[in-house]
Length: 89
Image (spheres, rainbow, N blue to C red):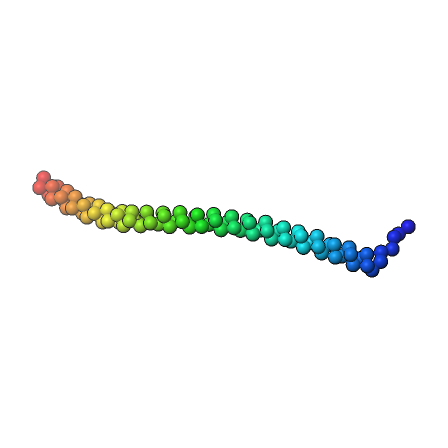
């Protein structure tokens, strides 16, 4: 035999369902917030490391560019000397 549910019982069940849902959403919000905080901390660390790398690499890039210029200049001079030596032979 089926049990009849009164309107009041149905209202209580619905209210209980919403309360459970509210608790689950609160728990989800808290967990999501904690996870986002962790991601933010990790990204802050990555940004700091990238800034450090840029600080270190900046002068190195300029030094390498200067060395490349010097090498090209020296290569030109060596080529001229080789041509002079070969013309003397």
